[in-house]
Image 1: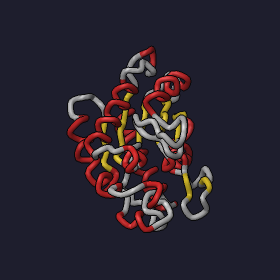
Image 2: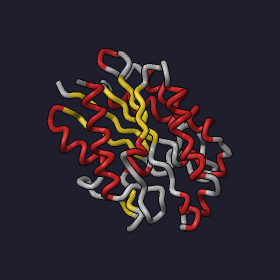
Image 3: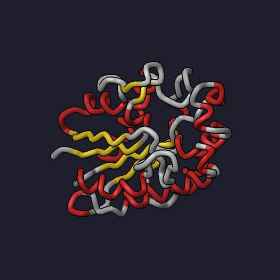
Image 4: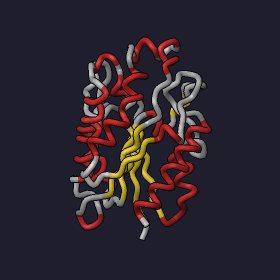
Length: 213
């Protein structure tokens, strides 16, 4: 029987190309690479949304809070063997006023909701893998994305993984810090380029197989 995986994230799961302001093609996106390389034994479901946060309601754009969407999302795709969550980049926006620890708290709240959803086989808990995204490069502030993001985003993203690792200890939720394996681009310093997608696909494939096999 096929193993089902949902990849729940933001523009770096959706596949935003900072060079063209469009979406990378299937064979470039890490989710698309993962789908191809895992093969017919797996069912891959992309659930990336640009601008998505873990728990914050964005005052400028609607429908971006992950906490209000994750339950119906997972139940609509159930039964699921693994839920991969990679969020946190958008949560660093200055307008949300969150510390790096607050951002980690929101992601853990989201992950626990996924774990308790009953979306796994026979209504059980699915496996959940939280990935700390690569940190935002400090140079982002000097790019067009700097003004809408606001200040302090790079610093908060650098601190996120440490807080996530501590808060997820003992929860039964898997955790990976991607910073040693994947880097953001050198255009806006907060999105993956093709090499970043390739590296992310390798990282997620390794851990998905480790968890599910």
